[in-house]
Length: 161
Image (tube, rainbow, N blue to C red):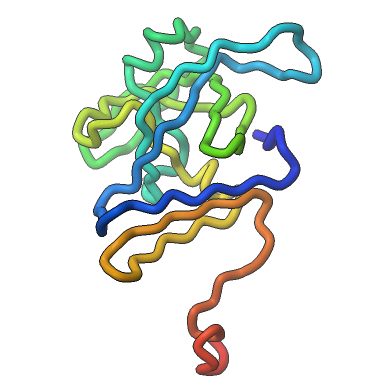
């Protein structure tokens, strides 16, 4: 998984405090613009950012919409128990042209999230991710590559964290 851009970032400001961090994202079949001709068809899906997910998860709707071929299967352990999940390769297009190629995603029933995709730590961990709730509004921001540690204790001048 390598980002297709050198330095990218985006910020989403919600008009109220939210309990679920969601964004519209694009998904396509895997595509390497440096080695392939043409451009992929990018389809928009609703994504939830899930720091409890170790990898990206896609719904059957994503698999069917993009006609994704299953490349492997893996036993997954979720809050709903253990199951056999299909593994697929996708490209992920986050807001503001932040993108990732050849992301391994697993399929799962994620209807409880009312989402088509869960963005997991495989992507979140590639950069800096922060969530704030000033003035009863939520703001999330993400940048890649990681550029610094955010340390609220140090920022307050309270010494070492």
